[in-house]
Length: 401
Ligand code: MEV
Image (tube, rainbow, N blue to C red; front, side, top):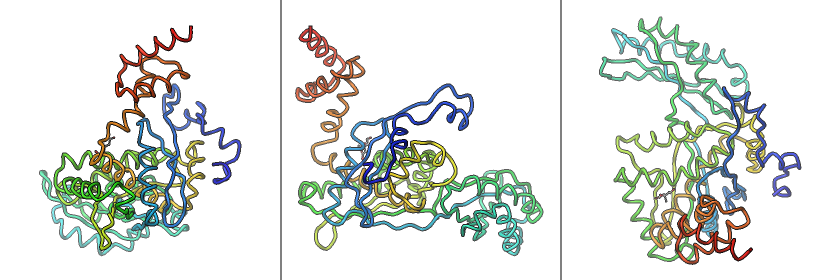
């Protein structure tokens, strides 16, 4: 990995619990320690013609194996191809008690240039990098307290996630918005429904690479249910987020922002639905696609501070937040494809439990050198439980003595 990614000795040493308590103490409040979870590399990802090693931070067994497996099956048709809308985020300013919401809307739109200029003055660095506010929208929202005028600043955040930039701009404009609307402004904050920061990925799978036509039909059936049934869609999307969140976390980004955005986007049409779709193309191959908001950054936040996140960004070899977002979308698609494939064929439990059996052996108190032996035995017997692990542990300890 060092050869492929150019990671130095020091960076490699960071990977094992590289966040020191002094650093953690500067990141959040009331620090008493650091909390580690496993970090693995998902392999086989060919994205826009480039082989990418994908660091994933997750506590869930079989997620990294499944993503790698899904990515391997996509390679036959060239891997993942991606696109995006660009790094635009929305900031919301809520004006209440406005007597003439439509008049206020016109007033704001008439002063659009002035508002954009004032907002951009707050963050000259972002403007210098080619970003900044590039539009203002006015939404009149009917609420149970009457109409509210909600102004949206559309901000190009470049390589930042953007929350700080957008929130500062929204706060700076609030007094002027009160003047223009004759209303009272309360909220001045980013929207996590980042519908102008979408990442998309597409992969094509040949039936012979994925276990045959029946598996393909099963995946299409499963996807069709997730399009119309919110109970299934929630689990379907949870599987996508297994991959998405693991990469977002590994790169020091805000997992909650991406999760909130993904789920809100899934419900944007009025009913919660799946974020992926599957269909057959003219050649009879399976085409999987995903589209979701990915609000992440490469500058600011923990990405530039957390040593493991820094090493992970280097492993990914990404040059922009946009590129990272498209990789994350590809991982979400691979993760979802692998889950659906397992679900419609052998079921999820066999693979999952044989990997989970190591956790069970650890729960039973097995020492590190016995964990793999006990896990392998339980998987072979198909009896995976803490009780069985304890029995095997006792047997093995007796044999050793
Ligand atoms: C488990 O973490 C994720 C799955 O439930 C996803 C799915 O059902 O599609 C397997």
